[in-house]
Picture 1 (cartoon, helix red, strand yellow):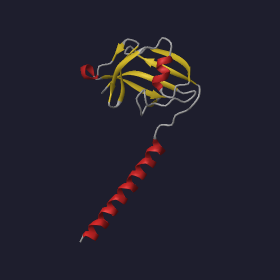
Picture 2 (cartoon, one colour; picture 1 turned 30 degrees about the horizontal axis):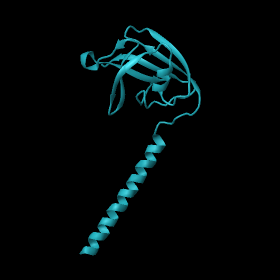
Picture 3 (cartoon, helix red, strand yellow; picture 1 turned 45 degrees about the horizontal axis):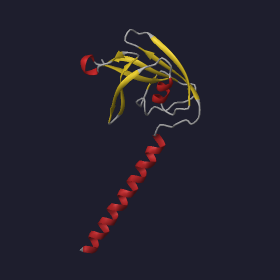
Picture 4 (cartoon, helix red, strand yellow; picture 1 turned 60 degrees about the vertical axis):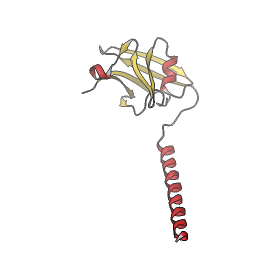
Length: 136
């Protein structure tokens, strides 16, 4: 009886190891790719009035937040959370989701972004948009 339990435990451990390996492979395949070295990007901010300000940044930063920190004249604020930095205001314009369903949406070359500002990788020549948005 003890021999059968030992085989079941060994089989269970083997299955867990294989699952972890598969999950790691999937993560590394689909994780955001970081571009090393200097790159020139454009950051566009569209506020609640529909006005757009544009910032061209040449940076060695790997993620959008670093480029935002370096963009002259661009200001932003927010809070750190378990999900990353949550942008709450840009250039003095606050978005309060609880109050009116407003938030700052992130787009990359016009496509809705999959990451927050501290996880969105930068690529040379791309445009990153922060757009004041009201949820429907």
